[in-house]
Amino acid sequence: MNHSPIFRKTSGNPWIVRVLLLALVLTSGWLRGASSVSRNGVTWTFDRDCTTGQYVTGDPWVVGPVTIVSITPKPVDGRNGTMINPSTGTTQGFDKDFIKGYNDYVSALNVGQSLPLTVPVNSSVVSSITADAYTQFNTIEMFSVLTVVASQPDAGSFRPPVVGSGSKASLWKESQLDYSKLNSLPKSSIASLPAIGNYETWFSYPWVELNPTWTGRYVHTSYMAPSGYGKDIAHRTGDAALLLNLDFTNTQKRKLLIGLVQAGIDNYGFILGGGTWFNDGGHNVGRLSPVIVAAGVLNDSRLKAVIKGGGLKFQEFQSTFFVSQNDVNFTGRVGTNGQQSYPYTASDIGMPEWGIRHTGAPQYDNNFWSALYRDINGSCHTAPTMTARVMGMRTTIGWEPLFQYAERHLTYEQSASYKGEFNSNPTPAFHKQFYNSFKNASAPDGSGGTEPVVYDFAVDDLIKVTKTTNVRQSGALTATKLGEQPVGAAGVIVDGPVGPDADNITWWKVNFHDGVDGWTGQDNYVLVTPPVRPAIKTVEEKTNN
Image (cartoon, rainbow, N blue to C red):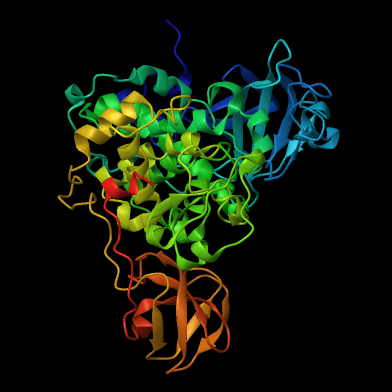
């Protein structure tokens, strides 16, 4: 029998050589030399043998620079397009069949029609497969990602985010996943348990997000959501996050956890690339849950920073608020799409509430259970908030309006006074059962997570500065500094709270009597003679607005 020379008997021990080779393979992310790599129906062919391997997700990498001589399915002008390091925006080079004005096709962005092409290191080569027959939604059937790296990643590395340029070095590895951060709640308590295998499949593919406007739904694949709609993305990501906190074994959780964490990493990259999921109907919900899970199991400060509510990077934060005197005083409210508008009154102050475009267009806030899109959004809030609660991430997020509105919405939906306003878009049965069964569960570390954060101040409080305080554009130390307020400065809290953050700072927005207005940390001022506040409603009372 012929053997490769490296395995031929020598005066030394051939098994040592074999063991060394095996170790090389196992520590190099399935390192091999290849003239092509394939993933999810896409094959990239090179002009020579290259050093290639796979991330823990199965997505391929290649040490570059590399010259791609062919891609199959073959990219043509307007179909099966390929982009390199796509950025956030409303233009793309994948497919020409999107509705005109929605994700306009730019031929120059489709680099797949210009082969051979030398691709530099630090490149994400994103190739698409166009659906066989034209469809208004899910026009793209599949995305596949080849990452061109400067050197081979460590074994078990996660793929770097799709969006944006810069280094494509891997930031995280499977070995960093801490399964103890996930809960292990009894799935026997759930009657409507989704099949975990479906989610393993859906999250084994790249979840590519590029367009932060409502028209981004047209770019979404069917494995992300039928018709690409945000509500359906939210239910799918929410199901996955909740499933991972049930009492499956770690082995049973592994495949889904890897896929969901990778989706969270890609969403993180979307935000770093300048993306924000603005509050807009039912389109931009659902991107929060994967990042919550990724931030928790990787215990990473960078991921935790982007899920802080004060950053307003997710629709779930932008659209939830506590009713304030400013909301009561607001004039010029209009109903969405001509719907009747109902105002807020003094008795509503402090109530957790939702508004279709509260951040940016608060005139559409509507104190009405049947307000358009309330049902859609409310159906999406239970999963991320319960995921955060059972993982002990509530204070990390620090956005109580979302947590308390989610509970208010579901409590009403399940109450005797419910009049069927959400029947067209109810909270999924799995999410309801998870909440009902585990709303008082502790996090794996024994911490609470179910109780709301208690704050020393409230909107409409009059405060006085006790030490010189910086005033910032938003509730974060990294936010732009607008100026300072000196000791003795007085003002009225008009928004907040945000936090407490990683530095244990709770932020409030203050309109000062003089000088610059903005967000300040509450440790820099005291409450002036406490105002008389309407009693905060109980959850039961809040359901009867």
